[in-house]
Length: 489
Image (cartoon, rainbow, N blue to C red; front, side, top):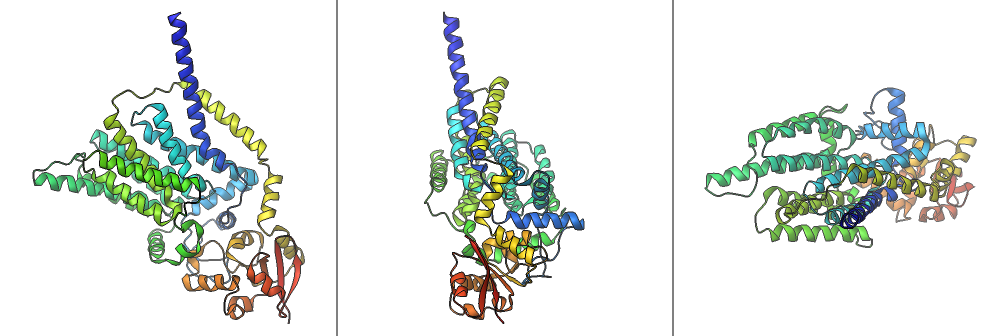
């Protein structure tokens, strides 16, 4: 009887573990399995196609009428090539499943980051679940998905180095940064984290000179400086070399993008994910204060994550990953029990459960080419583009920001006036085109509008209503979402 009771207890614990793990890995992956409505994916398709056709990366703009011929650094060229290849092979469902796969990888790397703390499984799962819930809006086909994974991997390596006191594992990082720099420009956040670790080593040694000890590992500043230098050097191993840092400097100096691009706006606290970010922030600050010891690297990394997350909601992932690492690391100091050992059988059962549920979700959400294309037609001017292509209407085209990427991909031979590559256009020009589409003062004198032979307008925009009543323009095509205007001569 005691043996039977023990088996039942073990079975219950195993079932609970499988349920917790399955639910944890479904948070992001279910969110990722949604129709494609991302504005930028289309111009990335076109860029990837251009790279395949020309066997090189673009060094100047070929796709817009306003910025044509100016320097353009496609810092995420490898991501554009990846999504174009996936789309060419598997159509839109392939892109959806790519995001689902990335969501699972993000959850796995974040889970491993906390798992090393040795917390009880419920606490471990709750901590990771909070972080995953905080970044659910980011589950779109964007290169930042790779950045989240690479940052979590880097933080795991740093955690292991700080616990072991030896820095040999850090030499993996230059290899990581070679790939990172070719996928996304936010590799600079990874360099910043490594720079903070180097700063901690200098602080530890400086305090030792004055006979004071800081509760932080005494890593060699020379080793960390060499690793940091190697990582920076690795980021030059891209087709753009030093030009990548010119783009970074341009972004640092560009403030207009933070005004016009919604993902760069601060959190509005109108959705649960924003409140989870705040909860993680408060919890991390509490844990750091509760330990009553100055921990240079965790504190500095937390401050960096807080600044980035509250400056632009797109960067909430930095704070989320930092928070669960700091809280988990502090939990290791207070929790002296053994962590829950996940067996191979439990892992296998969790994988099967997650796969089965995701299959059911894909069936329920009708993730097929026909249904995804139907969703695209409800969001983007597919029928208007078909009309323009069928009738050979000439450009130049005047379009708004939201549809620019789709038109760039769909209107072959007709350059758009603006698309998601906002860094190409400059703050003054961006403000002008926003004013024109909003029907602001002087909209009629916009030189791009006056020179356009084709205006593709979202019927909900103010400019569409103004052009409809203007004697200089006539409608040649109209459907439920778009209107196509041409000037009357």
